[in-house]
Length: 183
Image (cartoon, rainbow, N blue to C red):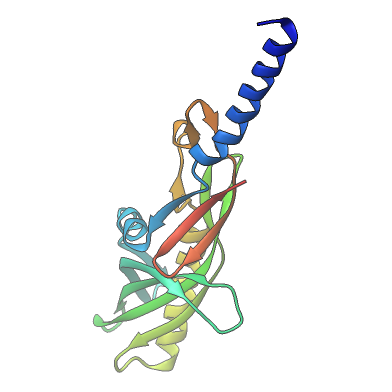
């Protein structure tokens, strides 16, 4: 093979190898809502005291998608809520639904929740004043435990395939889970 043919052959091989990596490397890494729920459940139950009058305990996180017409899909979190009135020693229970948008932080290789909010409180026979206090506690928990701590952390090797580093771009929420989308 002469020099020109060898150069042409090597150029073709390198071009084909570059194109092949797009087919070999994944375009996204998916997690089901169930997987995320199991991972998050390790951090719960969580208790928060409100003004020394009541204790709110959130437990059993369940994650799903919250769809609203014409809006991006939010990642939803449903918790069992137990409220203990400290002055009367009375207990009440219900559920709290929170939601937010997952965001990927490349510097730390972690998925965090942003724009967390309390969407709904459901409890039988709970007075409005206690519901308001419970919402306040739930909001504080959402900020501390959902926005302030990663939902998922990747190790460096989790983002390597075939000796190449994956470059996550964003997190998409789907009905059945979330997807970390690559560039």
